[in-house]
Image (cartoon, rainbow over all chains, first blue to last red; front, side, top):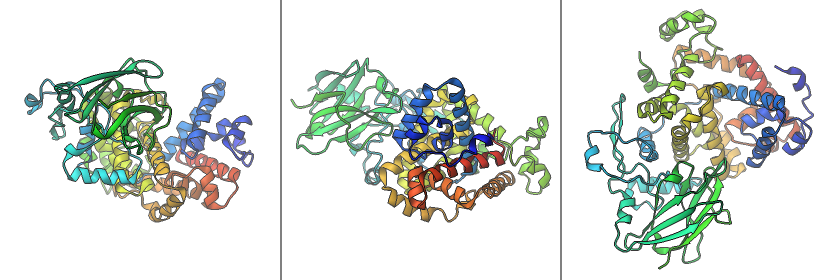
Length: 285
Length: 233
């Protein structure tokens, strides 16, 4: 299609910026759809297209759509995922997963909504993946990142014979909130709203509640970090997207941490915090 | 036969209604799943978009957007092999591939309401999310040199992507192979390096020792040719 334009092949520039400046944004549609540009280039294209004249924008979007359909039909690798993967996904679904009265629901009643952060901290690294695998084999209670989601929600999946899913029965938010040594700290979040931190030394945990905090910018997430007392690198505690913001999140293993920090990171999170933090709360007594 | 049964084995890609036989298209589903179905019956569907699957997946996404867990489970059954299969190609490492698959389906759960049927098919929407995730992860986890080395190992069976022997999907796979054949070798190579290698155009150019503008053109022209051959509109 549109062979006339494509006949101009060879007139691409060396960089995306040059192509945009030369009015060749539409010709970048295929590279864009293929994710064959860097994140920065993608942002530049997005910005350009969002303000481009309608005809140009629509032409670009149409070619992106066609390219994506083409790719989905062309690259068709299939492989059976591990049989327990679906269970693991369901166990991580945010607490918005409506509670249903499955056969075991009775024992888990009255649970507060709990951390919706999906427990995928440090997910970029192979080492983290291995660690996770080891932790799966061991006690799941030793997880140090934000305790998973859907705690105490019994989820019945009708029609596929999966039955009820039990997440963490010992709702960690309640455990911390009931602690006798509970302290509360509140810090403002840059960009609006505040973060309230409930700290329990005896539970070695803190509950973080955000209120009035705006959703992260498109393509970004909030990431929570524990900043160790010994000056070593901050340790990621997990990611928060728009949905997760409304729910309290539990951070465990605070005894060795001096403070809790929140940063804005690209979707998927970062290995190290991007400064400045949007909020930081001291954890020490 | 129910979708769920089909999904346990593979994506039910074979159940394309044929646009060319339009209204009776749905009725020939059974024929297409019969190994002895005449080829002429099936071949009409080869380049047609998998309309039935799209319709089903769209309906499931509607359900997911309303918080319907059964819809989520069925959507997973119908598509997880594709998501995981692609992740394995890009990331190689099984653990990272599982993580990616997990993140993709969490995103499906959270963003199903944002799916817009006008903007593309559900499978394309899903694979766009999946590829982006896999590429982000591979770029942060490995240097591009690593990736290039790994890519070599992952490409050998590139033309045998679809293990399924079901008639419909075999025909679709044959159409893809035929259409890939209309690309020049260098176009194919560039598109594949970008898709399964997770490379940027600049990295593709470095790897192939070619000029950056040349690679950009190859990728663009290759994809457009493929699109035209497959009849994507």
